[in-house]
Image 1 (cartoon, rainbow, N blue to C red):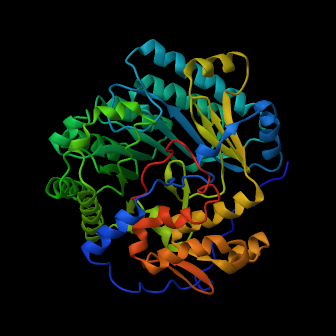
Image 2 (cartoon, rainbow, N blue to C red):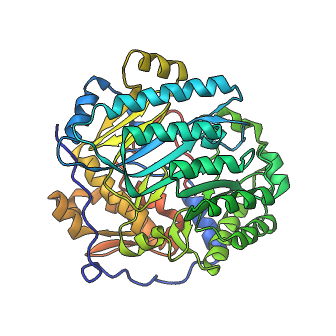
Length: 483
């Protein structure tokens, strides 16, 4: 099977094109509002290319052999993702594949099948790869009991070889968390935590059914720090019910005082056609477009003044954080968990709905829990969908990730890596970019394309110009709004 081109090493600082200063300062508020209205169209988040909506039926019968081939040579470095879908309660804003359940036997059954899936995949390796990155997501991984966290962690470490300095991260819901949970995470080796906050305002929390006092969050962070976790991320969401500039400023002030290493500020993805429970949110309580803009402006202003580096789109990090350093050296990467410092690693994903990638092939497990169990009972990998990248996909994937991660596309680099002539290959995309350049969202020059200061708000729109699938008509919406 033909393999994908590996991601190139970042250029040395002396070899990189110098990104020019912005043409001008950010536009006045009214002009920015007009830009938001003009470019507020559905667009992928580009955690992958093609987006997962392009995945189709996939014959997984040969996938075991594909894994064996990918690990035939010397031990490679890989990433793992584990999907733990269970939650204690339903958060109305949630867009994840999750199951609300407090049935401990149901959760224990899922863990038993999850371990069997892990064993199936690990047994297919020709040589033992080294895990350099692992992430547990959901749902809420911390809805597991402490003993279950340790048990699953032991099984993973028995099945795979972990690098001593591997990045091991876990998503945490502070509600119901105990110090014993954090001690179990420490036993597994987790050194990074992503903690959901969304908003500290009580009215907002009640409206989205996630009541979580600041003191609770701070207690969890203290436990994580004491357990030796060297990176704490807080997740915020703007665009939630009853949010105002005044209330969100108070949340941002609290976050600055807490001083996490990383902060994600997500645009609320209102997609009730995908997640019907979002209809529980009353539309009239959602902030208007102008208010959403003000919230985003406020987040960027407050956090950058607090010393955080704006990585683009929705992520911030302290200047000494590995994400910030990767941004500065051009080695930042984007995957299904957001921004990452590790690029080009095969990703093996476990659990219902989980998406993995081996070489140039994406695979996604079934989202149906009973089917997930049936397939594992039949000693089959529970893969339902997949996609094998074409040569054109690989070119566009590389280019779009450059936009999303560095805000810079070097034409000569792409010509050299893929054996094309940029100007002719992307002639239609360059035409689509002309209106964005006229609005000062990007600059198109002989050697490259740069995202401007204003364009940082519109990364998804700029990437959309190079997306070969964005012209395919559809009768139902697939994506959240870009801004």
